[in-house]
Length: 248
Length: 302
Image 1 (tube, one colour):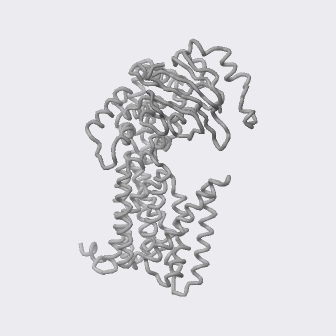
Image 2 (cartoon, one colour):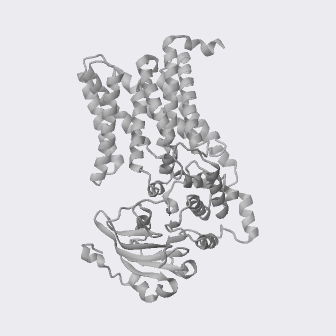
Image 3 (cartoon, rainbow over the protein chains, first blue to last red):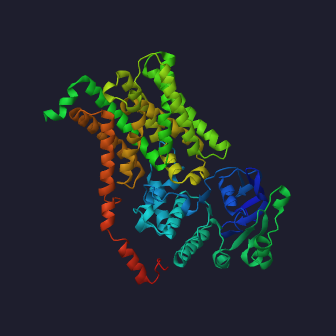
């Protein structure tokens, strides 16, 4: 695979000694929209959090563009599930997007023109410019998701890690979000999305990573999104975790 | 205008005024963090756990020197804060329960210790404070704490904002969230210790939370909430002090009543989040939903 890709090798993550992901290895090229699939507790969120540097990994390596990623990185933007943040926070759409710039700024530096332009561009790309002064609690679910995306764009991240962005969105917002994600991948971003609605997989994603504590399959939708893999992911619940002392 | 300035011709009232301004601003400013991080219960616990520290300070230094009280109170509050963390992390007991146990134990210990104190100390004094009795040394403590805490919080404003709004993203960006939490708790304890003389253990929380909660109902901007909370804290404290002089009531209580009144007014009349406006406002953003309908893609299609 080319340099412009994300490689995960032997990734293992545990919570309080209970293994959540076992020896996961896969590679995905940039400019793709990748669905992370699996039943509840399969490690979808854990995989995204491990990529974002939010959970400690027990073993394995992650590399992006040929460089080893060891912890939190500005190249990666994690977009939490919408209900994980307090939407009553005193902030406007614009000020949330500005947060994407904060870490590029040293604390004594003022918000410069370059930062303002990056925020403008991110708002524009996510079609939020007309809403920039709106209080964030007055947004619909789809708009909230776009605010998170705009913040990731302002951060100039290359890998976007979205935790269940489509959950709770109606069809219209879902289509709008899909179109925006399509535009992002056309720019060469790598978009990874945890997702649980199997019916929409073919229309949403180019590739899938199928998980059940361990990797079941990873690759283009047309090749790996098959009945056999689905059965192994969801159906019979064959789980190597048993040998690690985990009861199901 | 005589009635306006008359109270402040007395020297003790001048000192009380200076204390109101310093302590009012510091608490109002810090209150935003307490409100947004939902630390009110923790703040309450910490304020109560100052008591054994004060008693220890008196026992060890044999006097009511602010420096000794300061060290003792700081030590006790940090012990309770860290102890609660330790208890909640190492057992299934959650942090609020752990705080509840520790702070009542600490408070009781304080009462017991105070009974051994030879110096004449009134418990009421620590419980309700007495801003009219602040010494120059108390003022220096409040000033010193302001000079440390305010610039620190201003410098850390961006990472703190991210921590408050979206802790996961803050962490994924490499922000040391644990260290920031410690900074917040230590700032909180320092602020409380410096406000003790003015409003006392019991009323501290009102001074801390009310101005910030009032601003929370009035604005949609984090920096405005911080600075506005500080300003409201000053206005409420000075007004409360002034009223207490004329009505002849305890100043700490009067200050907290004024701050509570401000909150009540915002709760009723805030242009955006007041309950009166909500009663008379249409429930939807009409133009937007209409345009969606006309566009044929109603997002409210359920």
